[in-house]
Length: 252
Image 1 (cartoon, rainbow, N blue to C red):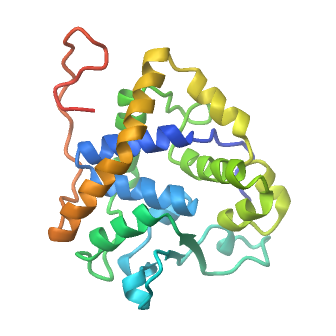
Image 2: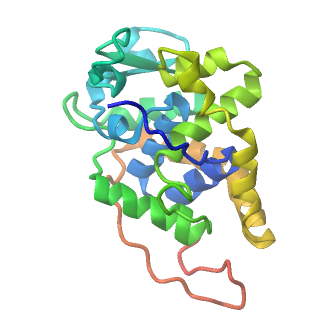
């Protein structure tokens, strides 16, 4: 089976950061970890859900002082495709965002080697995605026309291209064997368009939440270093309108 023939709508970087902020405030730490690893590694959703603790190689595991981690994908999609003969059967992705590496060091310290890092089913992931990016942030999460968990991979690639202005780092991050496979993911204009479809008030909320993400992640990292954080995704209470469409009884 080849890569999907339809382009995924890239998740804008500001939306990724806003979604991360919401997940942390809601204490949805498994979903927050999914977002962080997915953005930094450009892993496919199914690959990310299959990652065990032993497949996350942290500085503490490697005896390294560098803030660099690696995620090993034991059964990558391209490694299982017969037509992609040059693809490795086991592949890895590099994570060099310092704040993400420090979060993984703290969060994974409590997880046994054989346990899944993101212990969510596909149904739980879909519901969490819809709650954060659809209900809270106002995006369409419809398949193909909106942002979905696969948009995380496309958004990561798009943001990297914008930062590097070269397709080669994108090809490496996506683990593609040809440049042609990579070209579909370089869609910076679509990334801007999906955010531009939202009302001005929603865009302002996303910007505010994105700005809060670094502090929220740093605070959660400290908590994770002291004790194992809850791994369940608790249902959110119904939103309570108090004169502002963005007000809620349970924070972001």
